[in-house]
Each structure stands twice: as C-alpha cells, then as structure tokens.
Image (cartoon, rainbow, N blue to C red; front, side, top):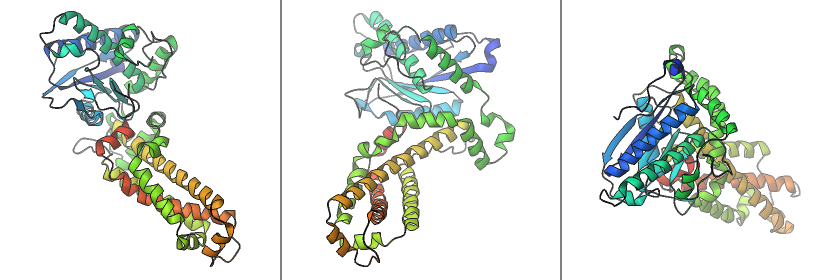
Length: 408
C-alpha cells in the first residue's frame, strides 16, 4: 500500500475521513502514476481547504487482467462496497481503465452512488493515450490525466455528500460534459464548502457499530436506530435514485404490466368481478401487491447487502433501507400509472351501456366509484404480473438503475 501523502494531524484525529481508492484492474505504469498523483493532489487540496479533518486515502490494488472493453459499473460498485466495509472506510473510489457501460448517455466517465458511498471512475475517457507505456509525451499526458482525475474525484466527493451541481465552469460541482471540462475546475464555491463541511462532520461522527450498547441491543433495534440517524441521507439517496422513473427504465416490467392491463380491460368477467369488490378489499389487495412485488424484486435481483460474518454496520443499514424504499416507490409509481390508465380507459372508451351489461351482478347502477374500484383491482393484478417481467431484467442493469445516481 502506498504511503500517505500527509502527516496525520493529532488535533483533527477526532474528525478522520477515510476515502479508499480501489484499483480494479491492471494499469500501465503511466496510468498508475497518474492515479497516485491524483490521489495525492486531492489529499493535499482537501487538507488545505478542510483542515478540521484528518484525510486518509489508502490505495488497494487488484491487479486483475481486463478482457473486455466495457465493464458494468454496478459490479465495480459492489466490489467497492466490499472493500469499504472490510476496511471501515467512509467512502470508496473504484478506478478502472475500461470504459463504463452506459445506459443513459453515449458514454460515462464516472458513476456515483450515494446509497453505498462508492463511486466508479474510468480512465478510458480522460487520456486514452496513456494506456501505452511507450507513448511519446507520456509525462505531459500523465500530468493532464492526474489533473483531470483529481477534479473528477472532488466532483464525485461532492456528489456522494449530496452537493448540488453548479453552473459555474470553474466550480468542482460543475457537471462535466467531457474530460476537457475537468481542466478548468479549480475550487468549491463558498456555499458548497460550508455544505460539504457540515456533511463531513456527520460522516466523521462515531458510527453506531462502534458503540457497544448499540451492538448489544440486537439487529432490529440497531436497524431502527441507524435508520433514524441516517434519515436525511436515506431521503437524499432516494431522491438521487429517481425511483419514479422506474416505469420508463424497466421496459420488461412496464411491458408485462401494460399488456396484462389491456387484456384484463377487455374481459367482461374482470369487470363484473372487479366492480363487485369492496373499497377495503381493493385497498388491502393493492397494499399487499405492492409489498409482495417489492420483496420479490429485492430478493430476485439480490439487491440487499449481506453482512455475512461481518458485523452489522450503519452504512449497511442505510444502503438496505434506501434500496428497499427505492424499489417500493418505483413499484408504487408503476401501480399508480396503471391505476390511472385503467380509470381513464374504463371511464372514457367503453360505452356505459356495455359496462352495465358486463357488470350485470352489480346491485346498483355503475358510477365513478365503481370505475375506481375496478382500476385498483386491475392495477393490483397488473403489478403482480409486471413483477414477473421485472425478474427477467438483467441483474447488472437492475442494480444500475437502483444504485447509480447519475452517469457523468
């Protein structure tokens, strides 16, 4: 492990921040030197601008061979989580020389995940010429890559702490469209420095797992206490994940749910059965469907972090709760979409006389309350079928839309 670029400050020992760098694949000599130089530059900058913290940035090398051009960011995020948990880091950066598989943009230089406090950085778009050890002008390219990587790392640190993006090109929180944009970033704005300081003070606090009384209280009480302590971070992670976009990102779930909705809406027996249900029954059915499908998706896609033999940590609780809520809100959004479609289709397309014949066993004349009850009934069945479609989504892609906040 390379030596630290700073001497620990005893006055800041109570506010230690550890950001580990994981080098996921074998790097050329120039690439490795650029990564270490960026780590040192980032450490020096943070030590100067935030002297109330003791900054430590250990490096872990995984000299694995790379056999493909693109790698799944979600897989590297999980590797970063494992290293972060084992070594008790606050944050982790995972670097790779491969291109990152992108789903929302033509390419991605990095992806942050506040839910797991890990970011993945690709060197491929920063200075691809450095992949060759014998390239001419290697020193200049190495310096340029180190400068770009340092700016990208500082931007990601802000992302992992919930800092809003800036419209000022020289601000580290400016959202870069290309590697060239990283060249002009020089500093955090004063307001963002204050916000980052407040966030880091919370990160540097003694973790719940370091308090003997909390550990001895049991897993359930530990979860409840950790959830309360990290409630703001959980809310921020949910906002970053944008679960309300699930119906548009999960094509198999949406296709299966909408297909089943259309079939159910042209079946006379479904109208008769659905309109004869009580509001209470449909409410219970809807709630049960949402909870059941969310648990099924979480289990099927293996989205929960498992501690194995390691002790339960505050970060694990934070990640699992935010992930569960992201999936639940995403499924609820899909349910509401189908509920609205069923209500609109049922009330505007089908003639009232035909509906009255289909719901012949209904004791009263069909009205809007009956259409809403039918919509809830059909949406509940649709979300159950949609969950089966979601189970066929690729695990890397599902992890990507669940964990990744954005593609940079």
